[in-house]
Image (cartoon, rainbow, N blue to C red; front, side):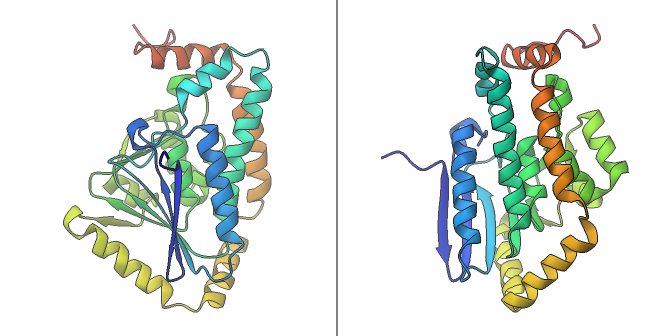
Length: 263
């Protein structure tokens, strides 16, 4: 039996969800997202679970969407419907993760790129390794990080979000911490201990009080967020239908510069 794309382990009230496609840099396929959504719904329905940890197998947290699968969809006669379904699925994943009543902790080693960055931005607290980095390179592929945008603006504010989104630059972990993308930087020799100490601190809070606190945080800082996220899913799907998207994805997979780049 092959390993599951998403592993769910529960110990002492803590659920750990692990992205488990390390040979493909944990790139997100629609099958992987569907499995992740199912596991998130399972976790959210269990009142005994007090915290969710989101992590990944291998040296890279997540390289974003599987661009090969996106390119495959581009050749289908119903490509538009496929892209809308795919973006709705990703929307449902990050919305369910964002709305989870229990505290959520993203544990990041290596890079969190594109849709992978969106997953950690939907979590409450982010611990990142000292060599981690973050990027939203979608415009370089002719598409847009529309669904990630509300999450990023919520976390960093529009000024810093604009830099990340428009430059496509890779942000190192120190800069990410200054922006608010991650909260704690953990050296490799103390990584597991740092996560354990933080979990212990979270679990020292009363479950009901933490749920009320999280609800209040959402009320104070995310007014209108659900509508923004829903609108973003539509924008994301539409951006995949453009000639630029087709050229950008083809160029990436063919390891060449897209036609709009300066000569």
